[in-house]
Every structure is written in C-alpha cells, then in structure tokens.
Image (cartoon, rainbow, N blue to C red; front, side):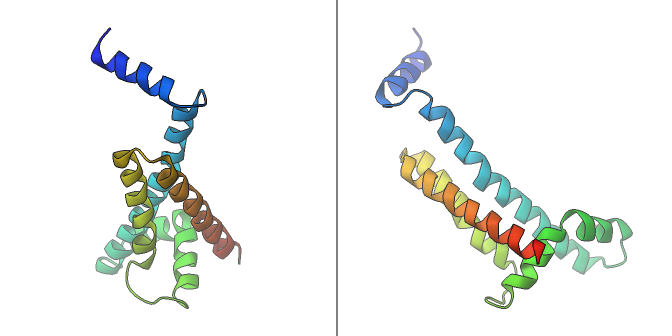
Length: 128
C-alpha cells in the first residue's frame, strides 16, 4: 500500500461515522462559494465606479449581482465602509481554511452555519 492509501485508511478508521469526510467536503463549498461571489460583486462594483459608461458592466451589475447590490444598501444602515460585505464574509472563509489546516471539524461546521445565516440575510434583503 502507498502512503496515501495508508493515510486514507487511517483517516476512515479514525472517524466515528462513515461518510463524515464527504460531508465535511460539502461544508467547504458554501463559505468558499459565497466568498467568490461576494468578491466578484465587489470587484464589479469597483470596476463600474472606474468605468461608468460600460453597458455590459451595468447589465451584469443590475441583473446578475442585484442581490448583492440590495444587500449592500441594507447593510449600509448598520455599517458604512467600503467592501463591508467582503470584510464580513472573508473571516468565514479563513475559518474554513483554519479548520482544514488544524483538522478541526467544529471550525468548519461553525463557518458553514454562519454562511447559511449570511445567505439568509442576502435573500431577505433581496426580497424586501
């Protein structure tokens, strides 16, 4: 057996429930995907401020990233500084990466649950 196969066998025997590692991998998707989406929306807003005459950028901002624009307005009543959404979401991604590095499933679970709360806020602000 190779070293990788031994490590996987040791990892599977160390987890109390079968399939736990696959669940942990799924919990990584939410925070990292939300970070990428918020980063893309904030980057688009910055580029649009630099080039306000671009019709394509306006279309993408108004149609594709409207949920982030509306949540930015809702969030600005509480905190008013540039890139606030990105500064709120990025610790969740760092928490996931820290959970991977330290091999702590609790950090990954906390980050995943806080990401769900952030997505709920996004949907609530988009609806109203």
